[in-house]
Image: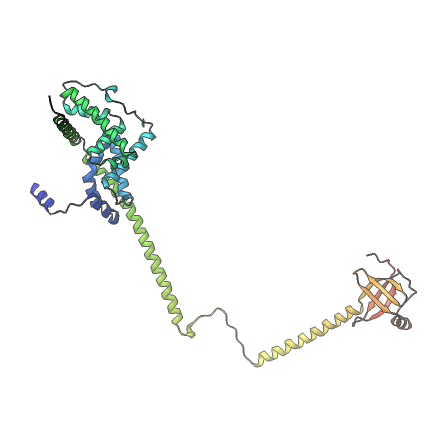
Length: 186
Length: 204
C-alpha cells in the first residue's frame, strides 16, 4: 500500500494551489477541487477552530469551501489562493459573529489583565493552547495567520487593517505567550 | 560582564529560540485539531448535488439550444424547398380571372341597360325635386329690383326687368313691400319660376 502511494507520489506532478483553482474554474473538474481541499482544508479548519469553536468552525469551513466550489472565478490570480480562501472564511466568520451578536471588539490589553488560570503541572502544550485561546480575537488571528505562513501585507489584506496594526497585534500576542510560557515552564 | 554585542547576540538567539518554540507548539496544536473525514465527505456530497443541479441546468440549456437550432434549420430548409418548387405546384390564396365569353358579354349588356334606366329615374327625381324647390325669404329692397334674404344668409337679387316679366307672366302674385315674407320657386335649371306671398312670417 505504502509502495503504491510512494510510486503515485513520485509520478504525480504536484501543482500549486493557484494552478489548481484556475484550472478548476475553467474545467469544473471535481478532482482539482478535492486536491485543493486536501492541501488547505486542515489549515483553514484549524484557523477557524482557534477563532471560534468546533461547531461554528465546521459550518464556516463547509460554507467557505462551497463558495470556492460555486464561484472559483472570484479568485484573483494576482494573489495566493490560500490568502483568498482565508479572507472568504474570515469574512464569513465575522459576519456570523455580527449576526449572532457575538462580535465583540476586544481591547488589545496585556494578558495579565485577562482571567487565565494555569496549574504549574500543566504541560506546555496546554499552557500554549489556553493562552492562545485567551488572546483577543485580532491578536489571535494575526498570530495564527503568521504561523500559517502569511506575510504582514497578506495578513493586513485578510484582516482588513494596516500593516503596522498587524505588527503590533502580533507583538502583543507573542509577548503574552512568552510571559505565560516563561512563567509556567522556564 | 558581557559586552553589548554579545548581549544582542544572546537576546536574538533567545528570540529565535522562542520563535521556534511557539512555532513547534502551534504545529503541535494543529496536528491535534484537524478536519475530519466526515467533513470532507459531507462537502463532497454537497458539491455532488450542486453539480447535478448545475449539470441538469446546463443540459437543459444545451437541449433548448439544440432544439432551437434544429427548428431554425428545418424552417430554412422548408422555405428553400418551397421556393424551388415549379410554379404549377405553388398554391395561391386568391384567383382573379379576366376573359371574354358570350355569356359574360350578355350579362354586361343587361347590367348596363339597368344602370341607364336607374340613372334616368334618378334625373327625373332630381328634376321633380328642383321644380318644387322653394326658398323662403324676406324682401328687403324695392327700387331697382328686389333683394331677397334667406335664413341661410343667402341674398337673391332679382332685376326689375325680370320682375316685370314675371309679373306679365302672372308668376308674381300679390303686391309686395319691403319686409314681406315670400316664397321663391325655382325650376330644374335653377331659374325663378314664381314668387308667392308667404302666409307665415319668416323668423330666422
